[in-house]
Structure formats: structure tokens, C-alpha cells
Image 1 (cartoon, rainbow, N blue to C red):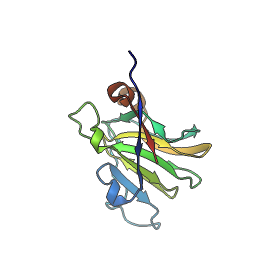
Image 2 (image 1 turned 90 degrees about the vertical axis):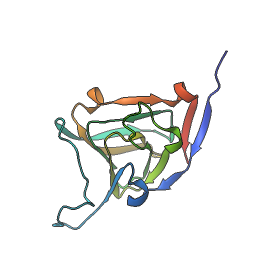
Image 3 (image 1 turned 120 degrees about the vertical axis):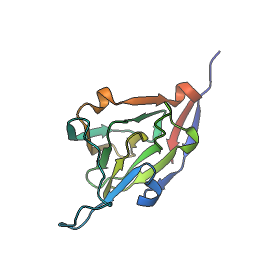
Image 4 (image 1 turned 120 degrees about the horizontal axis):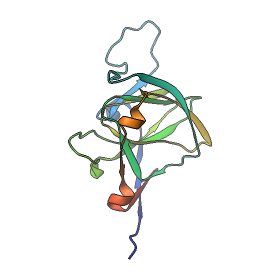
Length: 164
């Protein structure tokens, strides 16, 4: 007996600091010399060695069935060259071992800002329509080894998502 897979569309909202607040922060350019305040990324990188790098991703599209979270640190992502991109997120209910399906949201992110994900925020992405996009990524050096928890919607709900 086979199980059927459903593709569910997620409407991607254009990201703003207000609509993204429960997942993290949106950081836009500020003038040089501005004092540190709540509009700056509020980082937690104290549990290890910070790692800042550029990751190159190719032909990602907008479909996903897995979502990941990191509970020990914040993570920052942003595209280079002004390319827009998409991410799906779910708030960090850290006492649960899986995301709350009804709280899954998708965002379109313009290439003139970056995002900071709060500790524990579930995220799928970056995804995009371009052939190749380089992203800067700030997390801990061992985040993907010791702090990488993934949930597979295909296994749990026979679901795949597409951000539209």
C-alpha cells in the first residue's frame, strides 16, 4: 500500500520587521556611526566559535519537505548581489520536538537586507528562482554538527510545500 504525497502551497509575504518579529529580525542598512540599538541584530553566538562564511547554492526552486532548527544560537542569512529569495519558518516552541504545522509561514526577502533567526526558529531555505545565489551565513562553527534538528513533513504528514 502506497501513501500519496500532497503539495501544499504557502503564500510568501514580503518580509517586514513587523511580520517577521516572532521568528527573528530583519536588518536593513543604517548610516555609518549609528549607535547599537534594537534595530541591530541581537545575536547569541556565545555557545561556541562564530562562523561567518559565504555559501553558494544552485537551482533551489521553492519546494521543500524538510525544516530545520538550531536551539543553541542565532543564525543570520542574506544574499549577495541584491538577489531576492524565500524562506519558510515556524516559531520556536522549544518544548516541542517538531514544528507546529498550522504556524508555518513563508517570506520573500529582497536582496537589500538580511535576516536573523531566533534560537529555535524552524526554517526551510534559502530558496530562490535564480540559477545561483551566494549567501552570507553567520552561525557557530559546529552548528550543523551538534545543533541541527530536522523535521521531515514528507514522513510525518506526506506533505511537500511550495512557496508562491
